[in-house]
Length: 212
Image 1 (cartoon, one colour):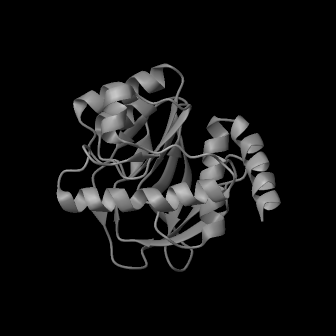
Image 2: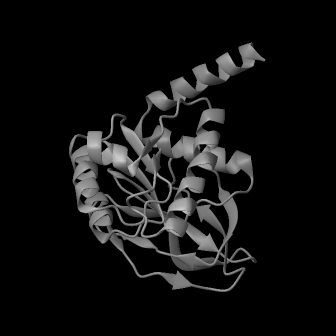
Image 3: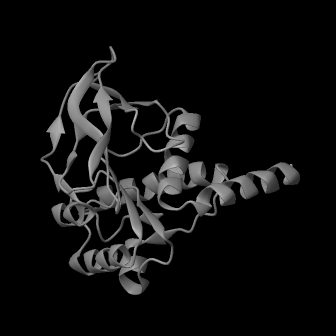
């Protein structure tokens, strides 16, 4: 899980990026996975060691970080990106990044996955977002797998999640809320790209149970 620092344009954004790491790391650890934390600067200096890297809020990676992320993808690594602002990174994953869009409360009240979603992912995750930066499928193996819904459950035109063979992209950050659905979301995405994650999660859960 990579904490945004060099990728954030100002101090306020860097503080928000730092706060975005803990909930994701906590959900993954609770699911039984071992979580390695890094920063943008760590990626620039040493690259990415693990097969799957998560960018909770790293809006504008500098060129030297983009080169490291591209090298990670070229080696077969995967990225799970939240609310990214780099069209270059989106293109590397097979997506086209659209402009930021805003709406009043309730327009984007949840996101729901379609029937073709990867295993383990929840049907629906509730969170109230008011600004999105949607990405769209732009390669042969890319597709939208989740869409935003309003408060009445009506699907909106903006995709919440797009997926390709290289990674996944969410059009906003993952807010706090129901832990179970968020834990399933993150574990399901990681396991989609790294099948060993399920065995690690089961082993971690057994160890946690034994330590109680």
